[in-house]
Each structure stands twice: as structure tokens, then as C-alpha cells.
Amino acid sequence: IYCTLRIEPRLIIESIITIDTMPNPKPPSSIQPIPVPVFALSWHTTPSLAPTHIYACSGGGGSSKTGIGNFIQVVIKSNPSEDGDGSDEETLKIDTGNDIGVSLDIMSFPFNQSDKAAKVVLVAGIEDDVRLYEFSLSSSGQCTSAPQLVASLTLEKGYIVNTVSFDPVGSHVAVGGEMGNVTLCAIVSTPSTSTVDDVNAESAKAEIQILKMLELIGHQKGICKVSFHPTNPSILLSSAKDGTCRVWDLKKASAAKQSQPAKDDTNTSTPTGPESTNTSTDPDHEIHTNDGCLDILNCKIYDPNDLAKKKPIPKKILNPNIGQLLVKGAVFGDLQGRFIYTIQSGRRGSAFLSVWRVVMKQVGSANQEKQQQQQPPRPPQPKQITFQEQSRIKISDFPVSSMSLSGDYKTLSLGDTNGNLILYNTDTFKETKNWKEIHDLPVTCVAARPLPVPLAGDQKTGIAIDAICASADSKICFLTTQRKSTLKKPRKTRSSSGGISSGSCWLTLLFVLFILSYSIKVSYDVCYEDHASELSSWDELQNGFLHCVIHTVWWAEHDRPGVAFVPQ
Image 1 (cartoon, rainbow, N blue to C red):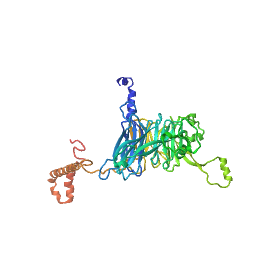
Image 2: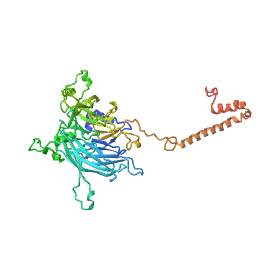
Image 3: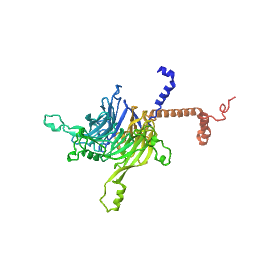
Image 4: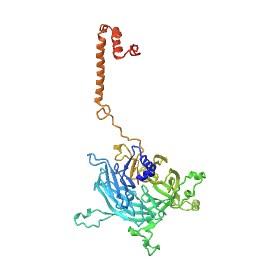
């Protein structure tokens, strides 16, 4: 360090100044340090669970022996019970061993009267594994059982899980990895295989398993994000590094799987008999299929207005090679699934938001449609669901690294590689708030507010958090668009602890009384004997005694010797 300072001290000083002057969010937004880099984040609540809400983050130092462990941190926020029992915040930690979780999702199930608890399930993507953790919450939101690993599924070597997502029901998990495949897994409960000798064997807990059901093939590069339809568990979105977003029909894919034979390395032909139907859920019988793809959304990273104005667009932007255009996220934009939002960018440069609208097209060619118009009316023909790009706008000067949509579908939270966090209004498609360089490193994960209802902690602090974001700089940011807390400041009380104290008031009053009494004494001594005879009438008193008090005791006249000039 001494040699470095002697050689180039200016570089050291500039780097220190840069770190110290990194802008932090202004209150009521806040930053919470965490001892490890964070790579995954999930925020969850439901109408039945609210106001209790849960957020979980995952990170660590990796497999290298750095002394930094790898874990998943789960924070449960709830309102304490009426009798005062319990805390409003509870933190749980799950050790993930030598590997880091890079994707998380949380699902909760309604309160069970028999168990007097609500079950919460957390799925984590860790290297080539999909792990399922479970814990329980009481009716007041307090954790009644520590998180336990209840099921795990190891995918093929080199899969490298990037994203996981529960379906709306919580019975299936979609998984996307670096190999470009989308895997659908089923969560099933099977009778416990352990032997129980007593009469309460029927009360033994069932074992939970993760079974691999479908392998959806189509993407040519790694998967960035998977997300289900808000209400239809058979519709799935997947976005990838090949510049596309795919809409999958899982029912159609499952039907295609059942119409194919079980996987057999010695026979690749397709039998035509009834014996070809396969309904097994054995993971060894899963079949790769791309028949369930409803539509392919080809995303672009240039402004369509530039193309209309015939402005020159570089070829690598207009027609990028596979792997140079990344679709970092795709989500349905409303509860009915009529819109899809995709976020895409190059490995460098600006990021764009595309809005896709569902369109129903008649199955068949244009010639067939003309022939049908000339022929007598027929029963309605099936229609094909497709999506057309409705608009495309630039949202950031830097590639977007993570995205999340709020539970009311009105706010998109976007984190970019420059450490910025942007909130976009989906009604106006205008920027609501932009926290510039809130992180020192690219934003690795972001979670938008899950429900537009008051959550635990909002009433206590007067702050409604709109988004949570994290990065490898070991910081978690809690961001809000509020300018100040909604709590009213307590009125100042005149006490010794604050405001104007009673002691100082009494001292001031005593000082005034002392000055007044002293002036009365001096006035009596100086003016009373000389003007005592003048006290019989008001005019004589005003001209004599009062004049003496005012101009002799209190204030000297301007022509008095020694006032206007130095007396001779």
C-alpha cells in the first residue's frame, strides 16, 4: 500500500471518493447490508396469507473456500398477536452446502384447520438440482416449524438451473437451464415407506417427491426466465438467450408425450397401435417434445420509429446472431393473459420493452378461408392463438439484468447492469421512478410488491415498499415511491425532554420581575422626593414625576450632557 501511494496516490484517492459518494436512496427508501453476494430473490403473499408476507434471498461465496457460506435467507413479516406474543419479523436460514441458489420461488397454501398452520413451500434452483423446502406458519404469521428439505431432483449434468417457477396451483414447477430446455416437474405426495408398528401408522406423513414430467425443446440457448399464466396452469412462457420468447401449451405437449412411445435407445420408430399410448409418470419415461409450442415471439432491440424514418441501423442490431440478443424476462401482463411483456437487450447497449397482444387466427390458409366464404355455412372452425407485437419502447441505456411484475399488474420493476432500478407504469408506459446506480454492481434480482394491499410493517413504519432489489455487492434495497412516511409526527410537549422546558420559562419570568422591581426602586429613590408634591393631579404627575422616571431613570434625553456630546 505504501508503494502504491507513492507511485500514484491520485488513483487511490479517486477510488475512495467514488465509493464514498455512491448515491444511496433517500428516505424512506433504505439499504440493508447482507454478508454475502445475492443472486436470487422472491417476495410472496396471498389474500389468505396477508398481511403476513415473506421474502427470501439466496447467495454466498460459491464452491471456493472463501470462508463465505452459501445459504437461503427467509424473512417472515407479520403483525404480532393481540396478546403481544411473537415478533413482527422473523429470519430463517437454510444452508445450501457448496452451491449457490440462483433462482427462488415461493408458494403458500391456505390455513389448515386440522394442523392449525399454513404450509409454505420454497423451490430453489441450485446448480443441476431442484430442491424443495417446507415450513409452516401459525394463524398469526409466526413460524411453527423450521424449513426442511422435503424433496430434491437432480437433472442431467451441465443443466445449470437458471430459473424456477410454481404454477398457480402449486402442483408443478417449471425449470429452465443453460442447456436451453424447459423442464416441467410435478410435485406429488406418496405414502411413507417407513414402517410404523403402532396403531397410529395412518397418521404418518406422506413423502413428497419431484417427478420430471416433460422436457420442452425449442430454444437454442440458455433459458433466462419461465413464468406461468396467472390463472391457467397449462400455459407457460419461457424467454431465452436466443432472442425469442415461447408460449407453451402443456396440455398439448402432454398429449404429444402420451402419443409417443417410452424412451428406448434401441428403437426410435413410432408405433401406430394402441400400445403406443404411454401414461406413466416415471421420470425415466419422460419424452422430449416441441409439439406444445403455441407461438414464438421474435424480439427486437431497435426502435421501430427509426426503421420507419429510414435511419441507418447497424446489422448486428437489426439482425443479431443467436446468442447476441437476450430476452431476460417475459410475463403475462394481466389476469386473463391477453398481454405479454418481454424485456430484451444485447449484451451491450439499450434495453427494450415489447408489449404483445393475443390474436385469434383461423386455422388454415387464406385460400381455404375464401373457399369457406363461398360455401354454405359450416360449424365454427378451431382458431389458433398467436401474439402480435403491439409496441416497443426503449426503457434503459443499459442491458436489463432482472425484472418483476407487481401483483396488481401495474408496475414493472427492472434492474440493469449499471446498478439502476427502474419502475415502469404499465398503464401509461412511462417511467415512475429511477434510482440511478443504487448498486455498485449489476442488479442480479428484483421482486415487485406481490399484492396492492397493506402488508405487515406498513402501518408501523408508514412506508409501503414497492420493490426489493439485490446485487453481488452484498446489499438489499427496499425502495418506495413515497417521499415521506405517512405517520404523523408526535406533537412537541413542553417537558424537560424536548421543546421549551418549564425551568427556562421560570428563569425568564424571574429575570423580568427582577428588572421591573429594580427600576421601580430606582425611580422611587430618584424621583419621589423631588416630585412628591406633584402627585395630586394627573397633569402634574405626567409632566413631573413620569418625565423624571422616563428620562432620568429609564432613558436619557438626547440633549442631556454626555449623551449627544462629551460634557465640558
